[in-house]
Length: 511
Image (tube, rainbow, N blue to C red; front, side, top):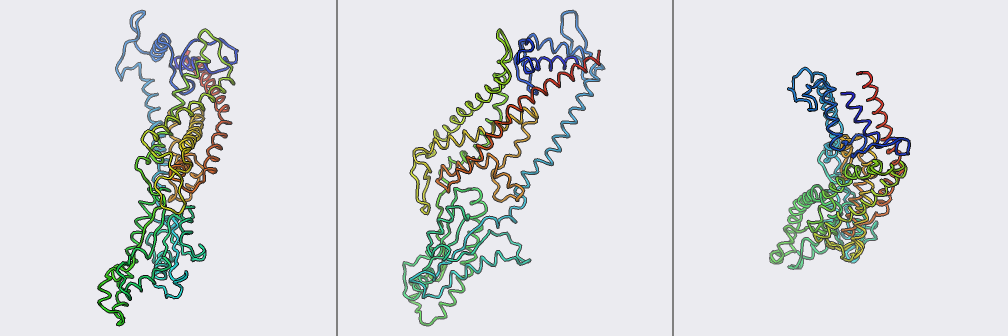
């Protein structure tokens, strides 16, 4: 069997060793190099199988016939059985250790979500009675809400309930302008904001005193957020907690306010009967998502669809390598100089990513994801505004192209260094949803996938732009892996030659 292995490695190395510099003649064959499966012509395959079977002691047939199959427990397979058992046990052990150590990282991302909810900052801004002409009214609603949120985030040992990161902000921090709070949320200074309007208490008092039947309780407060920033985080964690807070606020304020009104003899029951909403619920919240996450078809473009982008980038190595290797399999032609083969491989790979990323981007266009909508004001509620108008598709394509190149070149280098099938294991490190992850995972902000997701959301939803940072990180990955690419090629050739030498030494020992 060692002789057969020597033949295989010699067969592979003759395609990728020093002969490509013109030092030796090459024999005709097809296939990949290194750890990939060798693809030879039919005659070479048959010869290899025959030699391997005979080297292992298989039963030979008559002259000119291939070895006859034997049973699993045949004595001539004893050595092969022990080798297979050993390799099987080693591989199973490696995979088990990998599962317990590396795969645990996926579970650990969400292990402390409840404790990390306070990393989702929510501004609480009280304008109640702070802005003219309502400065003469003693505020009730604003102080009560800020007091409740401050109690939630208090550091009392008894306070173990998970909560969002409520931060009380003075109205003067926003120039006494509620619209500037929306701008702060759009600029991603906070995930959401609770705004108590300047006239909240004034309109409520006026409603019960004058019988204003048009009074709308939801005009007292606002909740502002950007769903398209991360629809999963917003819908799964932020909105449920904000809805719970609304219930707590109205449940607390309603009875207190009703008791106060009913104890005031100057307010007639007839007046109160005309504005029942001013007693219950008395106050409410208007909710505004500045950038709603719609339509649903956009979901693959910024979430699960990017998994396929990784798969395409990852599998380009085994798809294209046999094609490139034809340059050093001299059938009626001399082999290509090695460094020129490297230049060709890199160039062809980049062009392939350019075209494949275009095909990937066309899917989103075919399913009518909006790519030509105008932009919208930061503080306005707008569905599907695009960051670059009619040029949005080109920018989206370039994001996918640069991202695919960053991912693909990294996969190529890893494949050449550690070889198949172990290459797939390193994909476990591709994270992008890390807002609620422990700080250990913050390295994910420098990973390609996170920046592809963020750049795609920015482009498709006209979000706060950090495209310069996103593209900068992606180009850095491309540059670093481009520098490493020729080194990995030489390393792979060296590994192939070393395996050949070991196999030849083993063959000599068997003789």
